[in-house]
Amino acid sequence: MSLAGKTWFVTGASAGFGKAIVREVIARGGNAVAAARNPDDIADLVSEAPERVQAVKLDVTSDDQIAQSVSSALTRFGQIDVLVNNAGYGFLSTIEEAEDGAVRRQFETNLFGPAALMRAVLPGMRERRDGYIVNVSSTAGSRGFAGSGYYSASKAALEALTEALADEARGLGIRAMIVAPGPFRTDFFGRSMQLPDNEIADYANVLSQRQALASMDGQQRGDPVRGARIIVDTVMGENPPLRLVLGGQAQPTIVGAYRTKIADLAWSETIAPQADFPDE
Image 1 (cartoon, rainbow, N blue to C red):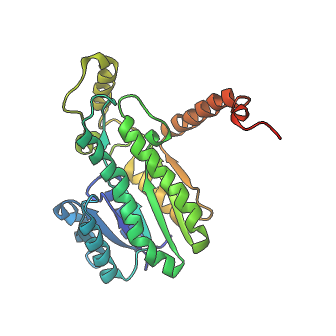
Image 2: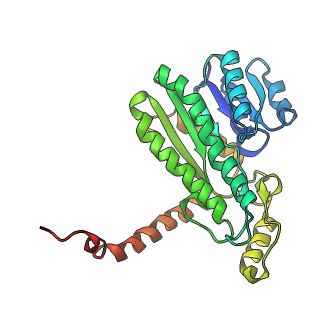
Image 3: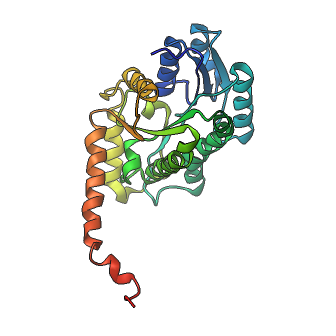
């Protein structure tokens, strides 16, 4: 399916899903705004299709850089048809180990940055009555996992924002989608993972899980090139879902998380009404 004349704005384009999505877009004839903290990391993408790829410097925690990069993209290509909020990182920490600054940085990057980008592109999409926003979450967005509670919380919040936007903007011709990938071979643990400064020995089981995850880096089953192709196909296809799950490990993990929640909610089924005022 050709993307000729369509412009995709992709954050975190220096590696992993971001780079793979940009390559998929330009392979289909589309325009791509490749955003990264260091534009040198995306020079190879520009060289592949210099007339259709724009590299922009973007730290998603900077309001000024968000405004500048969106303005530059609009000047170059006239409009942004699809925003892909892909930039983010994982903070593997127990609740107690984390320092306040580290927690705030996690949410600034994974939640507040994407939210600011959405606000920056929505006016143009609303004016045209057309547009698509894709927010990249994780299996961690479906539940809080021990040792990554802050990461899970940031992704769960991003999913809630996306669900709200989907309802708010549907009548305006704007669609939204959550992408929930499982483990992919994207160098996530090498480039996009942070640990707490001070580990607490009492959480030995969590520490061992961190080591196990790190040892699996480079062996994940997920292929970012295949994943990027599915994302683009889904955005351009008929009746796309609100939530797109990617990876054989992700599907049972997310389904299991929701089944556990539903089973837990059953406990309150007869109790919940007891908190109401008695019938008059």
